[in-house]
Image 1 (cartoon, rainbow over the protein chains, first blue to last red):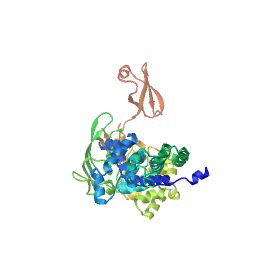
Image 2: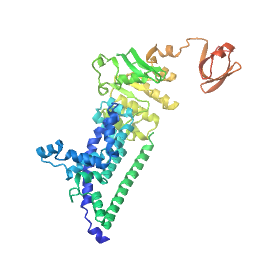
Image 3: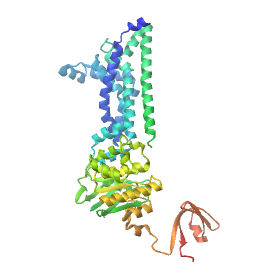
Image 4: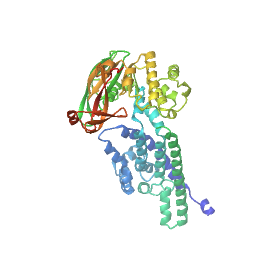
Length: 232
Length: 276
């Protein structure tokens, strides 16, 4: 058992976490303005944007993966542009995985932040405007500090969801060791070649880590909620 | 001098109506805005603050806040706003709430001392009582040294004792700073104590405007005064009315009985001549 652990190739795990960390950072930056806009607007376009944002939740990952692959490949104008003018290939490498993951995990970042913003007392934001502060100052000094639990939830769920993705990654990245072979793909391949022992170890590590990540989120949120319970 | 002449379509609970008002406020006045809920009082306050759009003109000391082509954003209007539910910045302490508006530490200290909050300056606002929160809210509104202080039923969430204390503090502030104030209130004693002018709104229009005494004493001077109550039951010429939490039985004649139905608001006149 110990020997098996010592011989284990941790590269797929490291790749999974690298991918999840980069995706989470990019999505956090993209989602803040998007979630703020959606929480404040009364425009008729709001349901359309919300529907598009939520699509990755309901679409089969293969559908999403197929279109991302199609769009980023050299046969499409976008893929061709990046290849020709910037010298960047977007499929079957790590960059492609990051782009695909950003689409795939977008709703998991946007939705908690949006509902956090929506739960804020509107008068509190108005009080900030009346105090002479711009929207940007209000977001950073009043809105964000008051939705810490939502931010934490968004970050953790996005991270965990990206670690857990499989279909999109397989379609856009394939399984190049050290480049696109993440933990979930590695497990799939182990099962295919009937290396159940390694598959068990990999899967057990995933289960244990996922559990402790989620457990820490819920413990933190319980503490925060207790702190805020005195304010009604 | 503050001049307002605006019009705005409101979507009321029952039907559409127009908020259509035109009046001036003299410097240092405390004007109470009263009327049934849905009459447009809060909307009017929010239009003054620039939080809602409207057509028309708002002029404050010859500075234009709103006209046909232009609307000064709330950030640039010199107003203080006290919300009914405090709306304090819950991630900050008492002092930080005030300094957020303006980093004038001396003025902040003065306001907190005036309201006996200075000892609590480092406490999180989530750990204050309702009355303390509203005092912080009042201080925060003053930090901008506003030309116009807007208060939307500031005391309605507080118990009667706290209310009296805060009324005194509002008056103290007014004495010290002389800020022109517009106050939404339903409480007759509060209006009487605080304001020197009352404007009554009904379905978006001004239906009464004058000194509190004239507006509030609608019945005029009379040897009789009347009590307002709700009719609960009427049987055999005896009406059961609830007035200020007490049940009262009133004898009514047959024709009066025909016109009344349960749930009506009615006035019961009482003879107040001294008996001995």
